[in-house]
Amino acid sequence: MAAVTRGSFSALRRLLTHQYRGARCFRLQSLRSQRVLPLLAAPRDRDEWTFSCRKLHATVARRGPIVQFKLSDIGEGIMEVTVKEWYVKEGDKVSQFDSICEVQSDKASVTITSRYDGVIKRLYYEVDGTALVGKPLVDIETESSSEVIQEEDVVETPAMAREEHTHQEIKGHKTQATPAVRRLAMENNIKLSEVVGTGKDGRILKEDILNYLAKQTGAILPPTPVHEIQTPGPAQAAAGRPVSTAAAIKPPPMTPRPVFTGKDVTEPLTGFHKAMVKTMTAALMIPHFGYCDEVDLSRLVALRGELRSVAEGRGVKLSYMPFLIKAASLGLLHFPILNSSLDDSCQNITYKASHNIGLAMDTSQGLLVPNVKNVQLLSVFEIAQELTRLQALGSAGQLGTSELSGGTFTLSNIGSIGGTYAKPVILPTQVAIGALGKIQVLPRFDGGGQVVPAHIMTVSWSADHRIIDGATMCRFSNLWKEYLENPASMVLDLK
Image (cartoon, rainbow, N blue to C red; front, side, top):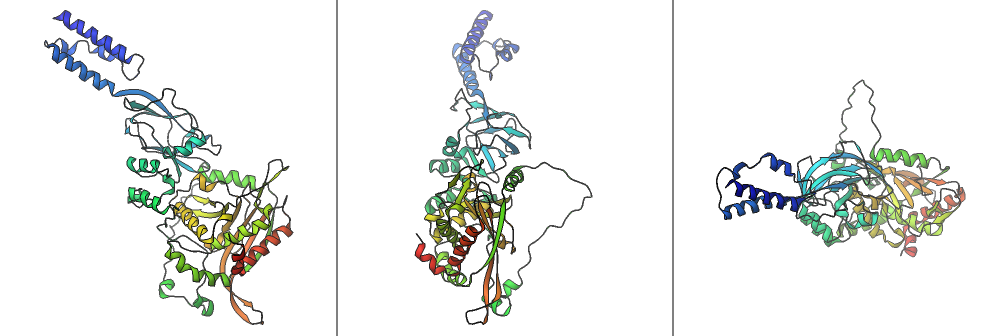
């Protein structure tokens, strides 16, 4: 019997060695250390022994190779990121599309999700550690059913990253969605970073994906009002009185009480603050010049009042910004040099065909500048739709690289906070930027010499003096001003 047992054990050992030769996940030594164990305890018939072998084989077969899951190329020339948060720990079981960690570059935040079903065996970085593109993030012991490429893990090119966008989402924080919802988004080629979740804690639901598909434009209203240029009401303009009791008793925004520690605190610059250092350092190498003017928006205020209810009936909140952006685009058609870029050697100038007009936006992550693409082809209503989408993404901290890159001209709305004048800094590689102040009701003389209330907004322009002279900036500003002071004139040039 002992000879039979030893022969059976030898046959089993040869079988396992043949099946799992070279696989790290199975070590024969552990089987040897247990020696014969229950095989000598009691005789077994052939059928029972065969069943035990199959059961052991099935148990081991579920374990697969350990794959190094590498940090993919997230574009924009980014070579390193900071690990901000781990969503898994060693020993955790993960499925495809489950979030692994959040990393942050100097341009945007990225949530990395798993390609495999398996178990996390190793985390390569601590929180706030610097991870390099193309280097391993985690080791995953994959399941035998997972499709594993042995030359894995190949670093994705930006083109691949756009196609397989469900594996990493550009955003401000972790995207909360079930694997089923992520798969639905992938099948319909939808970026989760562009969908605002309505579930608990911002979780993206199946209904959110279906609503996004139905609307096609992605014009999802943000959960809270977004700052816009504020216009004093007619009652305030005439008598300086509040429009309503509700407006008069509106509580002031809550400001946290400052805490005085008495100690100096030093911390490294990371994320968007680090990006601002680089951008502004490059920006202030540009020789700026400034130009300021004021615009009477009284007619635009009246026009917007007439169109506001129509736009709201279509599900879009109509602010003044779509008119200001469209007027800028019409002006750029006459002065294309303001929609250009200068190369690093200052030898060539490129005139941009698209008017990708950026809007500086104050978000919880800091100052971000998403842009509305191809404004020259959009109507005022279409611009309003796109602004609604961008504002919703900004409020949710989900602005991605596609929204933040490619700008050719910028408007900064300091009036939303209450500012009047500013000296805006040009964003490389652009050559001009405008800062819009708040709208104030101020006394002005009409054509008959009578003092009348007027809705006045100030604008402060900055331009690259290497290729733009003061006269060009002045003429552009005058044309932009003419469109806004007489908005009916825009109708002749709208496309």
